[in-house]
Image (cartoon, rainbow, N blue to C red; front, side, top):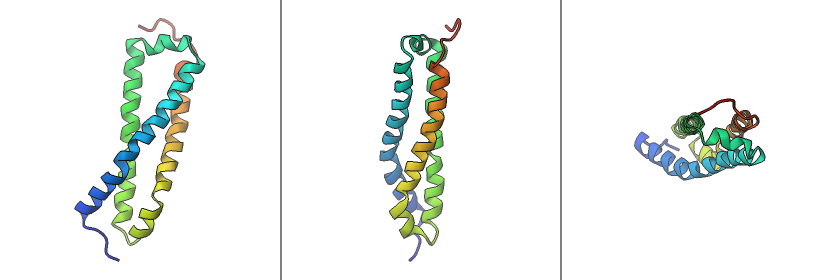
Length: 121
């Protein structure tokens, strides 16, 4: 079986991963909201400060940059001789990525919301 040309491979990768980015972001957002809620009302002090908002924004952007790592693996696998098998099982990479990012998000959320920050503005 021949590997797809690079343009078709990239298009296929985008078609597969971009709709699933929403699932990824919802999962991470749910973790953050859970820890925010568990530590409410102390957590609102951080969330409603400029530094808190900027920190969460930076972490959100970094989480989405990390999501793009799936493209490297996906395109590499599709251009290899394992294309057919890879397409069938690439959902496993999505699950592993969500679990890994979820674990990292949990630790950040615990650190952000578990104690009330002193003199944040």
